[in-house]
Length: 574
DNA sequence: GCCGTTTTCGGCCCGACTGTTTTCAGTCG
Image 1 (cartoon, chains in turn yellow, brown):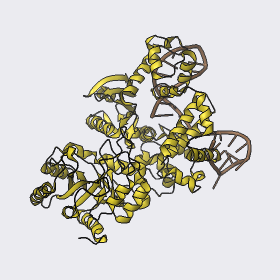
Image 2: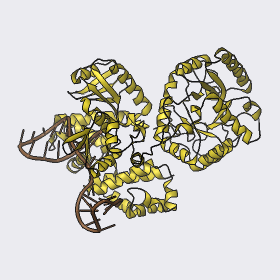
Image 3: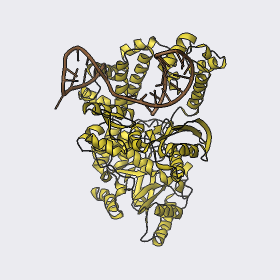
Image 4: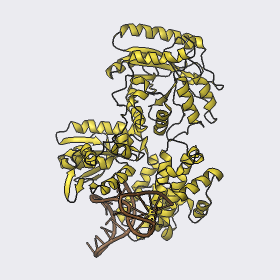
């Protein structure tokens, strides 16, 4: 799948055009194409082969030709030439918050700055201050921007952002000055990484801001005004709080939730209908039509309200206009977590502690899925261990009877040849088997996973692509072949909700729905304190337009067991 | 470079904030 590579190329193309001060609408066309291709759930190569490129919104004759050239030759001649006109390290400067293309151009042409390192040296020498439009504050801002960039590459993992946002909101919610408060931005959309954390509130402005900057866990206050404050929390991440008038709260929430692409598209709809939309409300002429809630605004436009997680301009606006939005899986629909490690393998918590936590979360069942014997580093269980552990589960099930059901599960390694780490005799004594790859991350693992899915006892594939966000690309995989096999064999694919995995990711979830594949959303918890992450998995699934009926752990226990047995029956085993 | 219920040419979302200016440019979301 070359989607990502091509998307990056078009983004770089846009960067270069921006630097050259080319026509801004050309630049936008490349940016749009990059975003479109990056968010595509289908393989661009397949779309090209089927002649469907022109059907993509924003792809015309010229971009089509460029895409085809890239897919054929691995490069685009015009782009190669363009690249030579600009020093290639220069675009790393654009990643610095507060530095845009105009600044990059100025820095390069006056001081010959080509990289972040160059810029740091120039700041040290005080050279920036001599430039037109540069003062002490601006230089200081750029300096801070560089620090921020070097700390985290500019992106925060969703799990970290949600954790921080929840902590802040839960504290502020209790404050008497706060009327309403919500997370906004890409955190609300549950994007797998976010730039900074945005929180929106309404109530008594000054009191809210004062309460915010004085919260515990705040390391530094960067900015404090009457409508907005920016802080750095102890984790080192930046959090923005905005306070708005109650009559504009919905409009502001809509506006600051984005995505940018969704908002741009939405405003063109507004224009067509004779409205104007901004963060204060929806207006006809000068008259305000809506703004208190998001629903009010979308309703006035004749639309359903798209859930935040799908506001990416990938079809949700059209669907909302036609009142055909899918009924997405809800955070409350999950009835159990089917991938949890206990202290029998490499987990920290006991099975009983896990069951108690699950009860507290309102679950009806859980599966304890310890590692299998080959995974020695994770204290994988021998066959005898499995049986002894199962006895403990039996006892606990007696104890928790009528409250929660503990399923005997295992996360079984898929060996290099695609066979499983236990024979079927052991597997048949388990209620839930999730198979996983933990070795050979560089080879193409399609065949290995397909072979595992052909085993009648394998109910699900854990973290199917093997990626770790920001650390490791997934192994090469023919994802569509995996989807087809999963649908055919009745094997679920996992949406692993652990915060640095989110695997399957959003666009793969959407593909799974298309292929009729069943999903299972699980946390891969190694401690009871990880189990909250289920909401990251549900958010990821929602981003992939997943409905309740697509996910097996929304079923009640009986129906889940029926589903699990169905595969064994299909293959003629007990 | 794309696109079409006003258009195959001439549009293309919108406003705030900051820092540096004294009327505005650049960046951001």
